Amino acid sequence: MKKYFTSQNVFWTGLLVTVAIISTWLLIEIQSAPRHKLLTKRNIPNAVMINTHSWQMNKDGSLKMQLISPKLIHLPRLSTTLMQTPHFILYDAGKKPWNVWARHGKAIHGMKILYLWDNVRFHQQAGPNNHATMLFTSAITVFPFKHFAQTDRPVIIKQPGDIVDAVGMRVDTDQGWVKLLKDVKVEYNPQQSQGAKQDQKN
Image 1 (cartoon, rainbow, N blue to C red):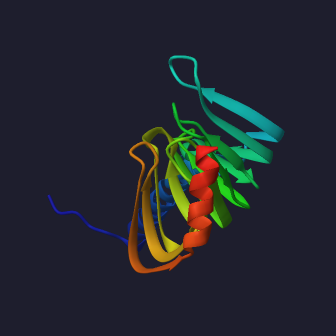
Image 2: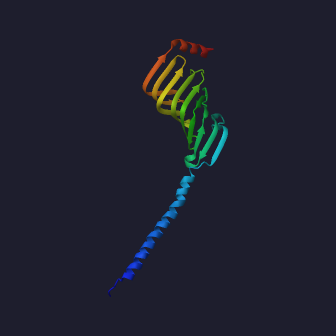
Image 3: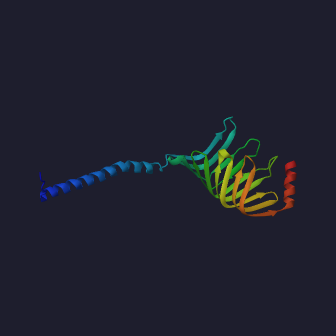
């Protein structure tokens, strides 16, 4: 049996195809819109904390870390917290704590990873097994639970009698070592070093 296509048949066929295409496009737009809005909402702050002073404890109840900041902003995406002028105090059993300051900070996945930038400073007071230490850099990544920090930026480390300039650094505060990556320069003042040793004895 032969089939014949008239101009009217062609018109209605074309119209149906056009409607099908438009309907499919609208369905895709409707299905994709909520997901797009959801992704956008994940970047909207869901909590703001003012004048924060928080403590984090170890499993044995000992103090692990303090955080002081005038403002914290929490974003749902990756559980990110933005920090204004954060001040951290990092504790390690049997050692003097490290004080850490920066103008800006960001924490990822709770406090597992800390990104600190702009006028970053570390300070540890002198103790039975260490000299007083100051460290300066423009940005650094800190892993508090691993007692580890790293940066590829220029750093300055000051101890009594010593000033060290370098580019790039790895620090393990638990093992007590510092690795400087390149362009290391050391300025040594023996008189200040002797004075610091005498202060430790006293």
